[in-house]
Image 1 (cartoon, rainbow, N blue to C red):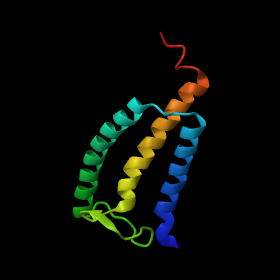
Image 2: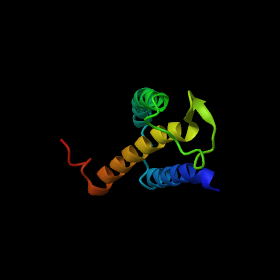
Image 3: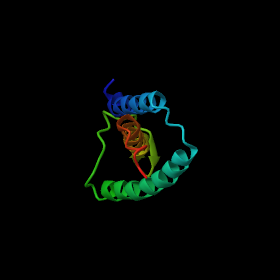
Image 4: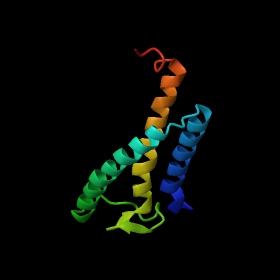
Length: 108
């Protein structure tokens, strides 16, 4: 069961983001397009860093806590999902807080 730890954390974070997104009705098409472009840049930069760090033996993933499915150059699928889910959760939380506080409507 330990091989599901990383995936379990990601599932929890993703579920929270989904709940917040539905609860605060964050359905802006422009938001999703912007997120996609930004996240592709994030993926390129950080997956390149992961690859470099793994090949230099400065970084590793505990094989007991991941599925063991390498996606790109020994980078586990969980790491790729991390760089999609965590930024999405951050942005969805930010947009929800803007709605909750009314900051969005007070701008000129």
